[in-house]
Amino acid sequence: MRNFWNTALRDLGKVGVAYILITVGVWLVFMILIPQLIMFDYSLRPMLPLREIGGPKDIWTLKNYMVFFSNRLHMAIFFKTIWSSLIVTLTALALCYPIAFYLAKVARGAKVGLLMLGLIIPYWINELLRLFAWQIILADMGILNQSLIFLGIIADPINFRMGNGAVILGMTYAYILFMVFPIYNVMESLDRNQLDAARDLGASWLRIHYKIVMPHAKPGIAVGCTMTFMLAAGTVAAPQLLGSPSSFWFTQVINTNFECANWNLGAAYATVLMLLCVIFMFIMLKIFKVGLKELTQ
Amino acid sequence: MKSSKSIFRIVTGLYLALFFAYMFLPLIFMTIIAFNANDIPQITPWKGFTLMWFGELAKDNQMWSALWNSFIVAFSVVAISVPIGLGGALLLTRLQFKARNFVYGVLVSPILTPGIILGISTFLFWDSYMNIPGGLWTAILGQSTFISSYCMLLIMSRAQRFDLTQEEAAFDLGATHRQVFWKITLPFLRPALISSMALAFMQSFDNYNTTLFAIGVEQTLPIYIGTKLRSFISPAMNALAVVFIVLTVIGAIVYEYRRRREIIKAEMKITPEPGTPVLRM
Image (cartoon, rainbow over all chains, first blue to last red):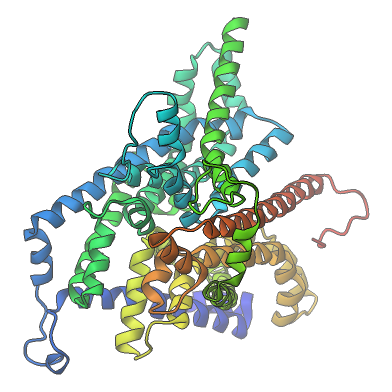
């Protein structure tokens, strides 16, 4: 430990070490750890009138979590959020893997730059506006209904906003590009010679992908899946703009708790969502056998 | 053999065309509608070309105050996140300690946390424990929590390529820590610092989830858009979308141009011409 401080002071000086300790310390303690712990603390306490806070009734209890686990409707919404996010993640992976591979290893020269631009532009456009575009397309008098009526496939407009389809469609569109870039980044570092060698030795392209490209791209796939799943499961905007009033999503349930001023219950629901995302991340690490460190490089 | 290769080419081309159509057609529809004189934001019926929706947008005072708030928040987030990101990057690239991987995991965890959670936890902490009600300040802090991680990763990726012998040489020649930092370390990190400022600004300007829960009753531009899109939808929102798209396209082109130039510079550096100063970026 003394060695550590000596080297640190030698390399960075007193001011440098102090700068690092202060910036990272404030960030770690006041922005990452304490708010998270306080949310957890909230979730463990019952909702009480102001004068009883800190009193004998203000104790840790799992009551808020019991409320969630005994509410069948909320459980159903929770599972709907899980499978919808899985659909979004798998669709994004299936659609983006070929794009990432093409960009990283097939396309060359100016074409790469142009295609990259074609991905960066929609990626940077505000999530709400990307969802708004689908709100327009799926509206009763929207372009999709108009086209289907024009083609004689349907007589009356379909209400696409009923059920969950529109939200899933919107989530896929809004978050798909979070899958492309992580996979592209790892694939770029793959040596083209490996692919050529395998091809010269007669490997089929399926085998090349299974044996060479995919193992190399594992960390990127794990990051892409974790990000996409987290964004889909935690999206507030997609159900707000594309959901139907009859079908709620988990983030909306959390929101309602806060709007009804039951912060404690809201905190418990938020903690459940947080745990879901953490568990999903660890499943990804396990499946793709990558370490936490490789995950974000 | 040859025909199978050309079929492969056609399939690839078709796939790319479909994918980019999927990415761009919705945005193109949204853009065209901004110029339709129809009250409902749809392409049909086409009631003639107009710029009136831009005028209507410009008349909306709520939009201007939300935009102003967005600028305040975004500049503050840049001012907080980039220095923190630099601190984190220096900690993780320059210091060796046992818990390094663990600290790294904790510092990037905000990126992998749903934005709604960051918003809620920031709000709960400041509102009930520090007695600072939700507002621009809590939005700034909530956003900075994860934007600092992005800045840290960006700066780290450059700091890892830093040649430590440069600093050692400077120390051997009697330079102080301050001189080394300002003359060697900082100039080397400058491109990464500039990109992280741009990234932090955009991330903040676009943020919805974290802000929604942290900001209380105030509005930034995304919160304003969200509120509008949930109630009555007017083509003025399409006009706003067009402004966003134009700015994004310009930003993306500048960014891509800079990135390419960096790559070309890096490639040239492998075979430096005689007399090229190695230190200059």
